[in-house]
Length: 310
Image (cartoon, rainbow, N blue to C red; front, side, top):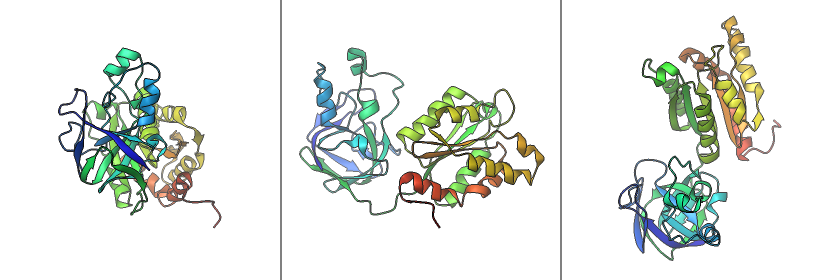
């Protein structure tokens, strides 16, 4: 439980946020009048007062809003909360959607003192229930009223697809199959066969969005541009080889060329990452192998399941 110490908004993107005494949270949007509101997962940004005070002790004179934060609260370490947590402020309810962020262009604070705490200490949320919030309001972590759905992302690796020379059919088909099975597909991404970009994307989705599942399609063959397994292994904390082995074993009953598939399955943090082949048909056949089994594995990673005994 904590207390709001500042509410900050900016009317235009690219301008510094300034403090206000009260604000209205709009369901599915963010803070009324704030340029960063909208139909996306980073509607409201939050930062702990203690993190700002620690930064100030290093000699940096920063005002509230300097890091781009919407809400500053004392008494809650937002960084330690898992994605999916509910945060209550008065009548309003927020759902935590992302921990930290990437900085593509460094802010004024970074350029002046060489550091910014928002990428590693800030969190982001979407508004589930709106309401008026005021400086001095109590902030508390609430018990969820509904189960947190399995969250997934789908990444298609294709040079021609990324260049607009070929329509991506595998990614949408995978996403549709996941939704049919109750998953919330939070991102669908189309990338060229670029190892560095894939590694950064996997790290962002696993560490910041804390997804349960990431499925990749494409880039698992013998071509020199097929780098998906190498990028996946590079970001792995642990391997989960049985899933990839089961896919290959089942696929061998369909075509002997299945032995040429190099896809891997790994764990990063609490996220399961599985490489699928590039063809839509092979993707569906691969999902037939593991889709009914992996909820148990994801439950173990989330801490919902205590052991594997039947």
